Image (cartoon, rainbow, N blue to C red):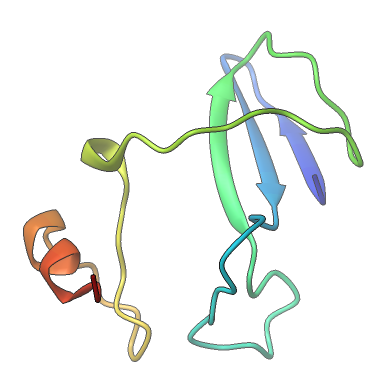
Length: 82
């Protein structure tokens, strides 16, 4: 984990996903290529730590690489190559 922000009822974790290479829309940003996960506020974690994470695709926000516009889940998933 690159950064951890403890809020009252949630913990935000900035991390770089493993596996497939991700291509951010704007790699000039310091956090380009990183994802943010919102966890319960009582999850013990720290910068440099490791947590197993999964994605609930029904709750995910998906954005176009060019322009950063949000896309409906059905549209975004249809655009992913098989």
